[in-house]
Amino acid sequence: MSTLPTEIVDHIFSFLDVLSHSEYNDLKACAEAHPFLLKSAERYLFSDIRLHSEPFTNGRAFNCSQFSDVLRNKPHVANYVYALGLDLGAHGLDWNLKDMLFIMSKLPRPKTIEIKADPFLRWSTLSKPFCEAFMNCLGLPSITKVSIVQTIDFPMITFGQCKGLVELSLDGIFDFSSSISTEPHPRLKSLSIYHWSCMFPNIITWANALNLRRLDVCVPTNDSNLARLSDLFQVCSAITDLELDFQDKCTFSHSLIVLVFTPVFSRPYTLSPL
Image (cartoon, rainbow, N blue to C red; front, top):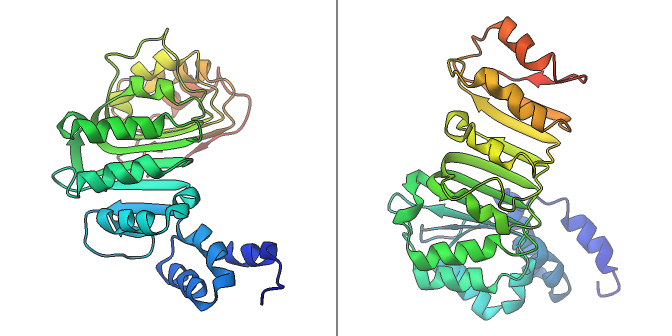
């Protein structure tokens, strides 16, 4: 067993999906089977972590206090966390704030971070120490992908500090009040917007920084801003992957689609009804 190259073990473990509960348990069994397998298995076991307020461990989902205990007992595990998801409960932070701050302070190089509220929550209702810790995580040079889901009034100016950010997903109502065109913005390659009406035309203030290759937008078919999509397309002329999700089962006008797309694109694109 000890003579088996670590590269082969890592390659085998790479086929086990840490997001699958059953395959996560398979990885965990490998980690417990032999000390030689432990380090390789841990790199995958802790690569994608989601923190819940629920008092149980289910695959990659941890209670905040449980995962803080893991980091205290095994500090090296923090180096393996490349994706961190924070699921907020109905009342915001239903977990121990001290543990949450400890976790975020110990992650040296996460690449992906997601915050999701259920139901929608205002950013201003969350505690100041948590907001500051989250902003500090966003500012890490390792961050390349961010997802903000079901959040109201999250300040868009925050993304100006995300120098390595290339992929951004937004679902909510965002605060553009402090974000102006002269401020730094990330050089995005992928942008997903769910609530188009709440984002347009403010997202155009990022025009000079957008370097999009992929754009995914959910558009209400009765929105007067639909025809103005061409403004965004003119700015983001490098797009090669476009997905438009039309609400209301895509009862749109074909003449409108011609108006939007004909002057802008010379390559084929896909319209995807919900």
